[in-house]
Length: 402
Length: 111
Image (tube, rainbow over all chains, first blue to last red; front, side, top):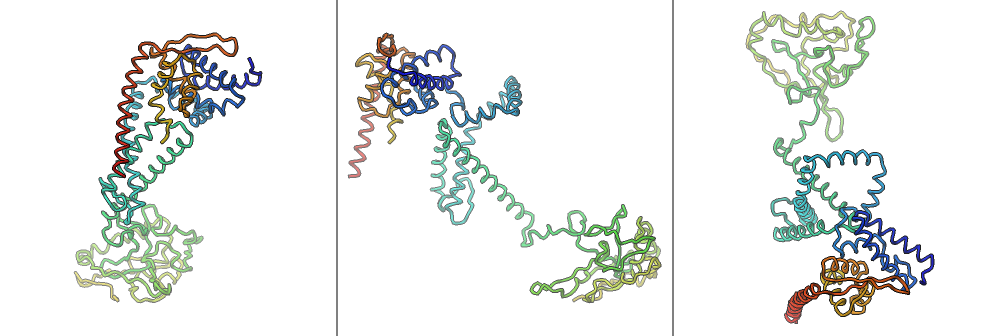
């Protein structure tokens, strides 16, 4: 025997590696196979001094080749060295152990086994879907007009080529999946391609759905106008401003609005300094700082210079004739109790000039009312408003209209 | 063309043919296949094929102790192996004829 101890240990190491690869075989069969392998290794080692790996390739591949040729059962996905290494690393983690116990429990459940079988049976469908998505992506790359999706996707602006490509890619897709991914690169490439197809497909579907939705709901060019948030909304109609009127049609300005909790209704968060200590109202600052003062100033800017060129006009309204006709009902409109009930009672001053003043003039001051800061000595709204209704059914509209 | 892919389909016939010429042990069969021109044949493939043919009842085996080196497991063909080889040979001939015809026809058409 010419083999030195070094060679022997090399053989043993190789043999051990192969043995590990065949660990799933029944004991007697594995022993039998390894006897052959050992003989083989001894022959090869006796032939020349080259390392066994050089002559025979890595033990993993040797074992895989032996398995395939001998018709031994495949070793699941574990015969892929990449997956094997990954699995070895993962199986040491705690999560993996938990998962394993879950898996074992699921394995005993017939329902879970049914589901697993079902999912596995869907794989051919996935092969088809994958080929279809690949065709669509190919079409996207080669068509002049971008995405083109139909039952017969176009490739290179041609449906015939599209169908041919789909058939070809289906064959590739199926062949790819049926062959065991034995090489790490191939396996990784498969994963990457699958993942990118899924992402591309999902992106396409969502963009497709988006396109459909905006088409369905916003047929006009103002597709996204509704996304501009107003101060609040009634139903799904956004409200960007409020123009109060007295029951007789007199336009009002400098109206403060509060919700049922006494919170100011406005586009900005309520400011602390609206009411000062001892009830003094600190609205000396610019009226725009009161968030719930209506109508809100709506400056109009020149689209080119960006400078303010005016104020938005009051909309033309038609006063409800019934309200205006009956003075008794006009005496108790809802704005009287709100003024009294407003829990913070913060704003008598600003209601001082509730007397309607048309804001039509494009004066730079948005609403001239609250600048008169009278500490708490304001006339209530109800008295400020002329209770004597004018001619019934009069249609009073905003005076100024450009 | 990748000959290793082609080999997969015909390795059984090749091994049977080699063993029919003379009994042989695993590495001997590998060497004789290579000597015959099948350079791409893999060691493990030959060993695996021998094992499968043996388990399929197409080969018998006997161990020959050796004074020098390892003892060797020799394989010999039996009747089942011979008839399998005959059948496979026919299949191969038909297939090869078909391929020859196809390829020469193509060459003729192209010329």
